[in-house]
Structures are given as structure tokens and as C-alpha cells.
Amino acid sequence: MLMFNHICVFCGSSFGTKPSYVKHVHSFAQTLVTRNINLIYGGGNNGLMGELARYVLEKDGEVVGVIPKKIHENVQHVELTDLIIVDDMHQRKAKMYELADGFITLPGGIGTIEELAESLTWQQIGYHQKPIGILNPNGFYDKLLSLLEHMADEGFLKANFLENIIISECPEELLQKMENFKPIYVNKWES
Image (cartoon, rainbow, N blue to C red):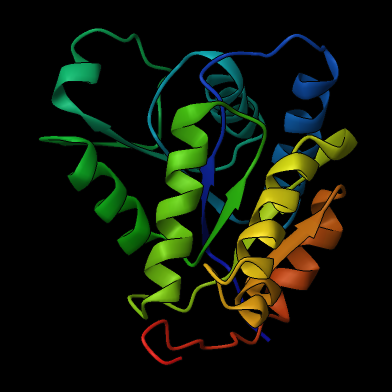
């Protein structure tokens, strides 16, 4: 069984249109704090990502932000446990991946999808074998998951690779599944 000290979370810098997104972020944050799991995130103060960091800090959890200089210059921050400033977005993701024991995606936009896609790509080509979870409240990611299945059906993804993606609507269940994760290594380069 895997033990998590640090989870990297990808989520929106906006709040979305439904108040339930904030409710789900609070529930997820409380689960992290209860389990003594430190949050690694993109360092921003806006939207769901800012709300997640504030909530974890208010409950005496630890939060490490990783942010590029250019964004840091334009964004106010909550008082984080640690803020790591890097040169660019590539270094940001590399540092977050280095610090994290696993990755969880909450609702978000293009940046969130890009971070999820890169973590999946790195797993697919063998750069890491860390668990990747998707918190899917109210089926937020159902259409994305259908697209991934379509990619597998059309031969652009190995079907068994999709078994590496851990999905749940419940934060506690998601973390339990991630603790029991055993990666299915799929050699992308073999037919």
C-alpha cells in the first residue's frame, strides 16, 4: 500500500458556474488535512486553486506552491507553508512532479487539462509510475473520460493504460484507491 505525504493537485483558477465546485474543494481539502497529506499546487490565489490552499491552511495543513516568476509578479498569494518560484511553466510542472507522491485533478479548464495530460503522458512513457486520480464530482470529467476511451478504441491509446487512471466522486474513496494503486506499465512503443 502506498502512503502519501504530498499530493499535487491540478484545478481551476476560476470558481466555475456552480457553487457545488467550492463545496467539493472543501470536502477534498478536509480529507487531505484529516489524512495529514501536504498539498502541492500551482501557487495561485484565484478560483478553486486559491480556495483549496486557503482551506488547507485554515485547517493547519501544509501547502507548497510552485509558481513561475511571471505569474508570481502579477498574483497575490495566501501565506503558504512554502512558495517555490521557478523560471517558467515547464520548470513549475517538473518541480511539482518531483515533490509529489501522486496527482489529483479537480474541476478546471484548459490549464488543468494540460497538467493532467502531461502527468498521464509522463506515466505512459515511463518517467514516473505515481498514481493519477480524477475527482469527478457530478460527472464533471465524464466527457473527457469518454474521449480517452474513444482514443483507445481508435488505437491511439493502449486500452489497458486507461486502467491507470483512478476516478471517483468521493475524496476519501479516491485516496483509498490511489493508496492501493499498482501501475500497469504499458510500453507505448510496442505494438
